[in-house]
Image: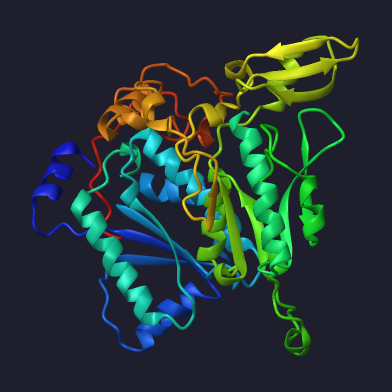
Length: 152
Length: 266
């Protein structure tokens, strides 16, 4: 994307953050499903990718998402102790704690990367989290730092 | 009497009292180990044995690791019902270990009401590797601490060597920002001044604003700019089609078509 277009995107009222959400199949995806089935309203800015377990996600996925134009990333798994694969979510938490530090070290706003737990029964919580993430990313504006120009 | 000796005496007294008054069924602390510069965890259930407890600059282990397993209920529902109630446990905690206890509490791996946290205002611990390195070719047979906090070690030929405290103090302890446990029921030792803030290195990335960090991060990667010079990153193995840093398939030529419009499908 040429820079003037990015600038106009920032200026225009129409800019909406694009959030890529990685949700685990057993808890968070079911939670998001419940939010939908219960007709809970939440911002449409989030695009969901279903993964078998939050432990499946490589931090590089998040990096690629940011490089390819996502303004923010959300990762959500089962609550500690509830993981379908015993401890995948704990492994994920370790990875993301490090990833977040790396992001900050490189000068990326840490609010672009969110990590949370949502269980299958927490449709309302999922909606609230999406709302919170969208607001946080909205405050930051579009992500320009990591975006690879040739892929736009 | 050095600060650590005082803490040791009070630790024994506190643990003995907790056990004899049946406030706790188990006390977890440190015991002198058979090797120098080391301690071993000690699980006490009898007040008479409180004298075995030790506190010295070698008490590096984080005793909170032993806590969750004491509160773990069996996975099988029937077995869980028949299981005895969780024990009350006393544990000696340094400032750094208290952080693990807080995390375990937040995740409900342990129960606060069953815990008696004996906090220790920690004056700093010795890095065993640093001490061994400082001794050089000598091998320590025993080690202790003198009144000023310096480490004295007896080496293999029977002579005594004094290692300066600053030399062998663990790196993390030199910059410790929480020598006192944030949560505790008892606090042993005199409050220690937190050194973290004063010693923070000014030019470290974490003390710079985000924009400055980004500029620093950009420096090794000029290839990310539009007109790509022939610069390789330090780890380049010329696997160019797969490279995340060099743009475009092939990645070699800076030839670029006019900027494409952003795809509308995202």
